[in-house]
Length: 203
Image (cartoon, rainbow, N blue to C red):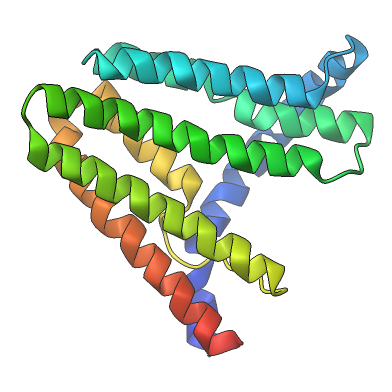
């Protein structure tokens, strides 16, 4: 079981490394916003609104503009946690709200892509987008259910941080759309299966 645990944390290390690099700056921003009376849930909802706007733009086929809007909104995904830390928040609602809106955000982005591909009669790409969305949901769902059982599961490469990087890259460079969707469609579902196997081996 030891080799399996060594393999599991590669994407987690990447995510934590990035968080470590920006933590100091985010803490400063979070403290400032807290002093201004801004609640972390407001930041979370604002980030979701940005994703909604990006999804509408993506649905119109303006992929690069949609990608730029997503990039501009990405810092909000870290700022809400920084504000919560600054205010010393103890309840769990913020985390639940953040995770829930993350799922809606994923649905909006891939829903926008699917809508555009359907209008353009590109049903192969539409199916790839839906497969990527399904895999992403499965990755998060397995982790959540395992967490309820007291098991922390971070197995596999395609956690949400990696998925966001890939989808932003695909939007900013439309030539990468087809291979990028294939990578997401296959990779997310493999990660979901990896997590299921990890749960099976450790329960």
